[in-house]
Length: 291
Length: 349
Image (cartoon, rainbow over all chains, first blue to last red; front, side, top):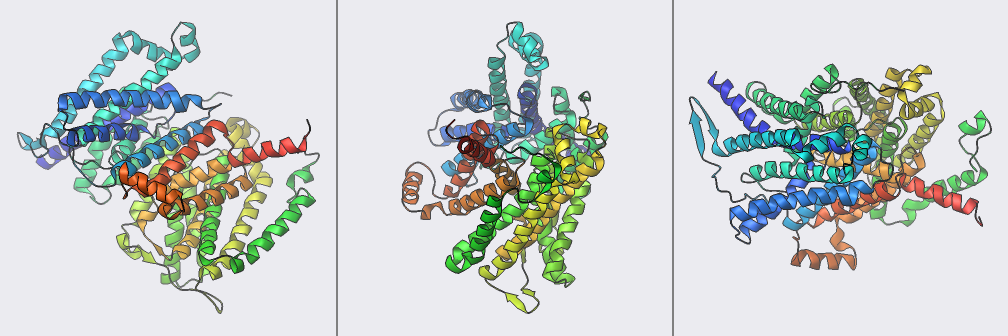
């Protein structure tokens, strides 16, 4: 039983970073209707910037982390403004291809600039600290990830519920033409959505960086977050969080009880099973195409 | 210009004498190529031919049927490992093992096509992507396939002909490629091909016209997987050594890149895209040896970047090509060709 609780707790901790990536993807999917393959790299580049600021220039944390988040916001906005918006008569495949292209460029740039060495980013909390609750323990970094993820989810909820801009975003996602007629600058809204999504992803990246910094570090979280978002239905923010936690927990339980070797692929088995039963995910309303 | 007046004009292989002439020239050039080119370039040609096979197959799925697949490296790996396993364990001759491995890949393609019936867009993308990653992971854990250490290709003998060099293999590979491309072109001109295209354009309308969606969507996956499997089987003998890391997600993305750069829904475009990007791929792997550019890149890497990561320029270049193609010429090389042709056919006007 203790084992079980321990695995669930580790699953929740890992699921938090998946959930942040999944949230980022869903935000962008709702705004631009594209599965965003550049999500991981939108977090990767700022993380490397933070790594450079902290270890090369010895800038204190309280300046480096906000600077990184601001950079992530600008990067997200830039990608939408400079590249995605310029697509002529885009279809879904074309948009996916564009995000893959952006992903390859950013990944290539980061690997070229920093090499493939595996490093760890300096961080205020040591990765070896852990907290014992009853019989189970959780590392304090994992706990921090969990808390930060919850805070971000709450912030996003409040933002979409109560702020002027959040409501404008929701309106744009529901019906772009109608929103534009009501005086909402829909293009600008979409750009800012990309920025917010990049910030959310970047937080996940920064929380993963104390353990390992290398160019492929965001692959796993990005794909698992994507998987979680698809399980949740791709258009629902709570669904993405729920799906990501399911992926994290099932992955750990599978690794603990069945086979540690195939732990990393179980997420995709979950997706195929869920999608066979509910083709639009668990939380999205099934969309029936009309002729 | 390209107006079709009756059914037979639509289905015939050669639409004009010009095409017959240039096809003849192409066959002639391909058959004398290994005698005049250096050995390295014969290897490059083999590499390109394999890309052509896989990309033409992928285009049937992505370009003609409109179903995205980001897991073709999985089928490719199944073909490669399947061919070698059939030859070493079941002692099949090469020319029998290759289609058998292709059929195994096709069966898996059919199975992947079943859940894909209900999926589209991002859901299909993540499901196929998951398939590609899972297939490679599972293959990497099977003892018979050498696990992480990889697998050496056995000696290749057809009848009394012992195939050793790249040049020998070229004469097997090129006819197979030629045949498969021709078959793909013919599939598109038949009832099956028209069913594929109708599914891409409007699947609900197609099903009301009597196109069996279940049959044709799974068939598209199976055909495409067969091409990838055959390509993989041949690839194993070009490299002569395969390991699971080769068949990464990046490889699936590369195949998709080639399809898009060549032009969605165009067989000849796919051939061009596969050749062009396959060549570029090999060249960029050792970018430091290219004259002039190489020295400049080396200096740049040493002062601003890292020299160990210089091979990643390949990623930057391909990413840039993808974005530029999608932004400015969504139909890729095929689209450029169409515009070129139209300009000269209607010239002074």
